[in-house]
Image 1: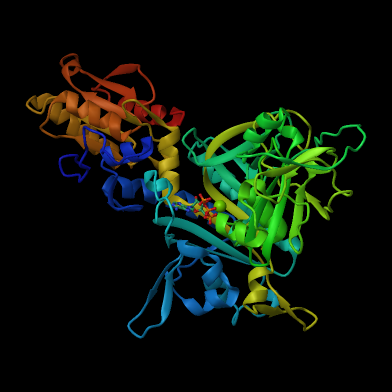
Image 2 (image 1 turned 120 degrees about the vertical axis):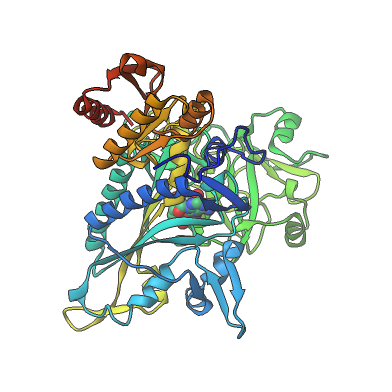
Length: 572
Ligand code: ATP
Ligand code: MG
């Protein structure tokens, strides 16, 4: 490929709206262009990278026994209404009507679509298990589309769905897909961890997220370096570290606490530690109001609470809702005297004595509160956010909080979708049974940005060889020098003949400009045809190293050998 013909408009300056390094470098390098918030075009260089990522994902899916198909992006509303997700999925779903006023969505995911697709024809236990996947565009009207390809509103995903007769069969495919995901990461040299994850709106029993380590990532993960336990912060379990006091119960007293609303203000006002306070937070969901209690020095983990209550629609009640329900401002809410509201407490409250709660009356708090005596807690569970330094739930060592980018997720769905969509097969005993299902998503376009987040320097991108748009760039330093032009073309031709992907920089621009561009677009190996040709030498330099080496141009076989060896040993 001749760079003079390549459509790869590079930019010297960073675009003003590039809010993360990968977006800056992919735009400056001429890989992508933004068309609207969270919506991008892939230029030829970007398309080449995308195709390589796609191919790796495809190969690993095929090895895992999944079969590729392609489903429509445009999906009828009815199937989503049947599962209840037309409403539950929320405003992230892009909805529209056709000319006949029928409702559709641009699919954010395809569980409804695929289950409806197969249910009339995947009828016998003999046909199962089956694992089907597609690589397709997805639409999600994200609240905050940002970070370039990392959080788009239109993006490319590989999504696979498996159908089984038993949980054991699902376990096997789940394991195969988990291994396939690990190999995808390895082939791109990604630094990653597979962590236990919350199942969110997708639902199901079991899930892992594949997270690429990156300081810029939006995923918070907790990792135990001692025993290997790792989980997303949403999911991370808390080891029991209840504080308890061996003290006699004191007299419950309502005290005036004017203008004191937050835990910090209250601790200061009463001159006590925050762990002597119990916070009461009010949520509302599909089954009405829920009051959640937690020790004052800890925070409530909303995804854990949602998953405990089995209600993904749960949200904080607004100040107005709280006032209407409890006749008290949010800062003075407490559990004493509350009626007909479900109270769920974090385990941290269980052994506390003589603590402080809101008075359920403006400007008042109760002190010396003791549950059982003063009010009842019927449900204890783990709903707290685990933070850096907390104890590992498996081995007790301190957990480390790290940042990452979720590139893939695998879920055991069980019969959640098959039940709602009445999707059954006939078992060997003649009875109708619901499919046991799994689903497996991989962010193809997000991967491109995640890799750049991991592999770049101040000059530009450093692509891992497996997904670099070209393996080699041959730079003709001065196009006015006949020798340099001739040798550059000869090497280009020779490498192409040996199926090495090579880009010849034959542009009539300054040498500095060419070197800068080559570094920016991150090709693993640069061959320079410049001044050293006077001594019969060309120069070889790897993108991830400062050193270069010279070799004689005369012996073509040895040039080819050197190029192949360097590429083979390229540590990315
Ligand atoms: P996130 O938590 O980052 O919003 P998700 O859990 O909603 O992601 P899934 O439904 O599991 O995502 O989708 C499968 C994969 O699709 C994700 O692991 C991620 O790599 C990718 N993906 C999800 N949302 C986006 C997006 N807005 N832009 C780009 N890729 C995305
Ligand atoms: Mg996810």
